[in-house]
Image (cartoon, rainbow, N blue to C red; front, side):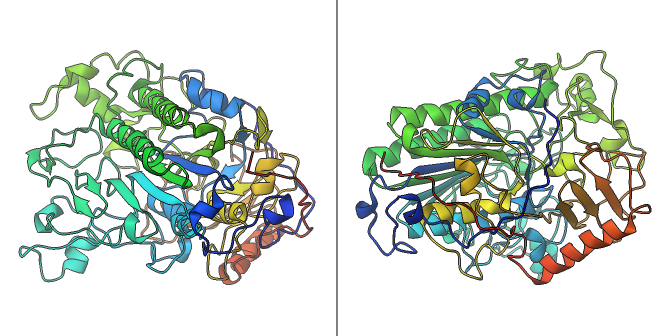
Length: 569
């Protein structure tokens, strides 16, 4: 795997919009005032695939040797692979908020951690999302998969008086006893810009274990759920919910949505947001069992690669692949591997349950990342099988370290994005909204995508100047803000009472300020804060500026906007 490249780029001014008109493409009226039939073939179909907890080192095209991902490898070889792509948070809910809204999640009520099972919606009703933006330009918009951005659940007559605290904001198990699953589920994807939704409320380890279509629960939870890694115990699931096949169900539904759209309305541009359940714990492989050399988790990465192949096959079968902008990335960094606690339980049995289907997932591997300061999972450590899920980076999911924040990012667009391209420019997942607006020839308003900068020019030309000078993500566990500029990284101290860092017991921890020079210390092993207080102060000032002045992270020289990307081809 190549070393992460961080270059100091001369400043460039990112214009508010890089219109297609300037690039030789007929420009559409802003916010979809034209009927889509008048826009045929002017814009590509768009498929955005968001993996769950996939690390920088999990794909073979990013250097993995214990896991082979031939489909994603081919997508990268036929398109562009970014090496310096960040998420806005190292945990699920805040990262997904940033992707859909183009706004740093630390500007919301969710200062750290993730939303609980029945939390209220995080995306404000009036806020522009990538779905509402594209819908305004005539797109059919569908979301299939994991939401994890909150919903408005209806309560039954058993609910406690203080439901806001005891149900909606609670992390306790068995809260589904207070939910009326027969009532519409409000505040979800179909009220945030999507024409259609099928999927799950949160992660596959979170209740309720039900499928939702649009705003209706298909089957309420009523059957016993066998305990697996990282899930509640003594609880129920929907009859149609099988923990082992959730990602397969989502994939097949996405294929069905693709087929139905192009069979009934092939001339309307199509947008699919596919947030997969893979590879979030529990990792329970079926047809890919034993297909990697990286344990249960590695085998689910192989299943994820199968999912991508199913989507590509569906696009090709509908003659839509050549006119589709396909983007693949992850919501945050990975776990190190399989938790030893549950590997042992699968081997020995647990609470009277037998797990003989996973008996072969053992060997002479020693637990790693043991931390006696953590919970029962961290105290037992992880089996990595000598696979490095974060690649050369230190840190994992929920960390402020690079492994939690830097993710695979692959773009494929035949005839527009050059094949076999590696792009080292700095981008952030919040930039997707502005990039899609740019592609539409639209301009975001002042209160839309406040932290989003179009990298369309970088997609079309890897040599184009970098569009943003900084990124200000947050630690998922503590909410500590981070400043990244020109290879320098500052991590502010975490506030007390928040989730601790739990993978390492040999670092100072999150209560002290940290400064790293990633240009020569990609593993973040030398804290330079005490030696270089002026550099730290410079980055603290950037955090303060971005807090009060959104849209202040662009570079300062105007981009060259001459390349023709006529989408009528």
